[in-house]
Length: 293
Image (tube, rainbow, N blue to C red; front, side):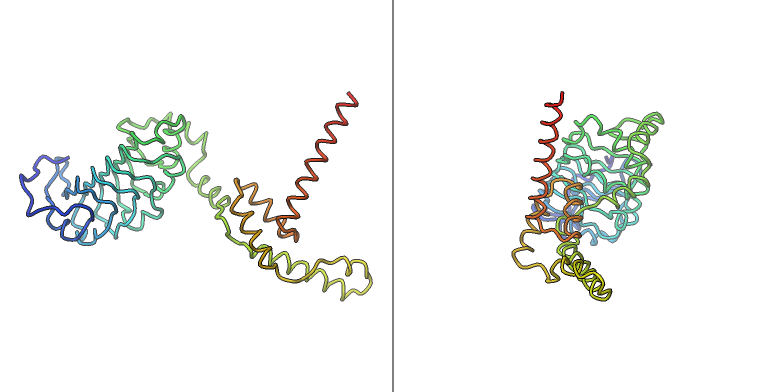
């Protein structure tokens, strides 16, 4: 990027970690676009750390040609406008980057390991990001990649060294909605395995206990009180079954069904039996329909 790289550094570069000593000894210069830049290329760095040593003095940081696996570890660097990370091993991007590098305008992630569209989502938090390159990553081979990225980063002007056209913005919004709509949907659909459980089972037990108590107070319906479910908390075996069922949930729909079943007081084993009975009923209905035909 620069046109005035020094011919030598202040001393030997220490390979492996991004240490304070390495940062202080690395070349610093004014780039061709008048950004004050530090050159940290080719040091086999595995993680971003210790950048607080820079004291927010740089407009651009070049971390290309290293071995970084996650885009994270930044201190608060409000001056930083450009981040160069080509030829690393980055597969994940941390959330809430706006808290540390909120003024970032240009991000180059060419030739890394980002593979899924959802891995791009954290970049939507960068309010000033206008130039982005993710070419050379597995995700860039996906058919919907470009429009999805545009939808997640609505301020982009250049993506993979190609200007973002107004037609592409319109197509992206039509396919994926506005960024605000996506965030609302994401907030509503976020599922973390184990989140809210076994609290959901405990809530189901509380519901049963309240129903039984109401039946006792009324005193008019002995059968309803007798039919109330046990009020004991789930046993250790039941909690283990709950955790296993949550871990095996493949989709948000599976997790939702499990949560509803737990609220109804059904443990995973009972839920499995109900699903099996439902499948048998469906097969019987199909067979009956074929006989009638």
